[in-house]
Amino acid sequence: MTFEKLFCSSPWFHMRITNSGTYEYCRWMNKSIPTRVNFAHSIQTESPKSYFQQTMAPIRKALLDGLTVPGCSDCLTMEQHGKISGRQRQLLKVGIMTEYFEPSMASSPLLSDFDYSVDNHGHTLRTVTDWQIDLGNYCNGACIFCNPESSSRLATEFKQLGLVDTVPPPAWCDDPILLQQFIEDLKLSDNLQYLHFLGGETVITPGFKKILSALVEADLARNITIGFTTNLTVWSDSVVDLLKEFKQVNLGMSVETLTRVNDYVRYPSELEKTRQLLDRWRILGEQQQWLIQLRITPTCLTVHDLSTVYEYAWQHHIAVESCNFLENPAFLRIGVLPLPQRQAACTRLSNWLADHSVTEQDQIVNTRDPNQARAQIYQDAQSYLNYLTTAPDESTKLPALITYLKRLEVSRNNNILTYIPEYEELFRSAGY
Image 1 (cartoon, one colour):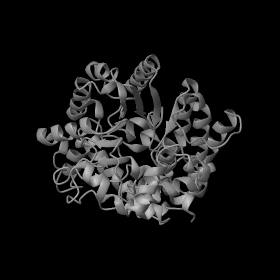
Image 2 (image 1 turned 60 degrees about the horizontal axis):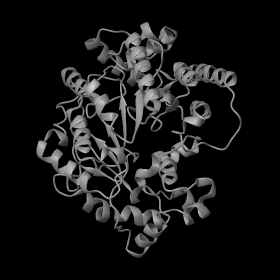
Image 3 (image 1 turned 60 degrees about the vertical axis):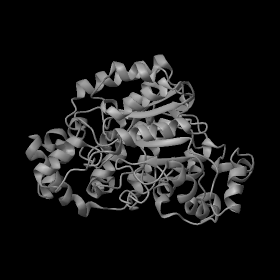
Image 4 (image 1 turned 90 degrees about the vertical axis):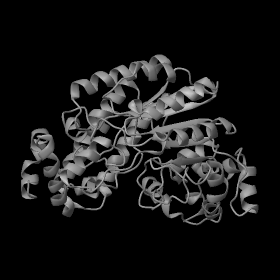
């Protein structure tokens, strides 16, 4: 694979802090890479500046040498199916366009920083300007595709069901000393531009409000863009008031379908309340001129109704985005659907695409551009149609899916066939 297909600018301005306080070089890195338990590189033992400038040096050197970085595999998979990857987004942030790679890289404002790293074994003098900040698993939701690390409610349920032995420890930001230390590091950063927060449910996570308040009090908010996603179950006037102080807000709203299937997969959501909060957050975003998106995690249980989300987005000119194609849990991947069900999902999505045309254009990398919202929606829908068509057959995982759903339904007192009755024969044949 060529240099331009592998190179990513992200390690020159971005890094992540996970729920446990460990550092990662990228928010999109493949989750099978075991950095999340590497406490040698965490806020408890190392400053963000040291990790970014020195510890990440081998990653930058590998990219400059045209080598494949194992953690970058998810982005490469996305690009193979026509889906915009994190790599492409990060390149665009520094003026590098994949279709004009060489001339745009030569004119990138980071060119001298790339050159410095070439001469210094991957080291850099830059500091982080773009963060992903994981705030722990404090969450009122228990989505079936989620995990205890990201949902306290799911962690409790899993322990009660015997699916895990222990629940995750408290997040780094629950320690007031570590949280204050991190806030001070943010204040000292050069040209801090973007903070993307993840939970849990960010809106109700105490650390989120404390960081926002500190940046507002330090008179830094007007130069910073905040990104976060809400699960459409809560609203907070005090958080909204803080967000209004920042330069810009990138608001993500999580929803899988606008049918009752959403109640099942995003348990314990209720469709009517989801719709009400979706409209309320959307209207606020429009009034504040925020960049708003619908965030999706398509699975084998929701892909057949995916067009309902695209239709809402189309009507309101909102982009639709998923971080990547779902990898885990493996039994929820789209490829778990056998061919007849996959073909039915393809037909629904194909019909929706046929009814919603856009002017043919180059691939849209800046998926947050509101002027291209409908073209982006169409592009994302097409990427899932491509994936439905080409994803490996993993229907052998269907019994594992049924076993998992049946265990959850014991505590939730629900039944998947109530939500997807057309799958009854399929699910019964797999042991439901």
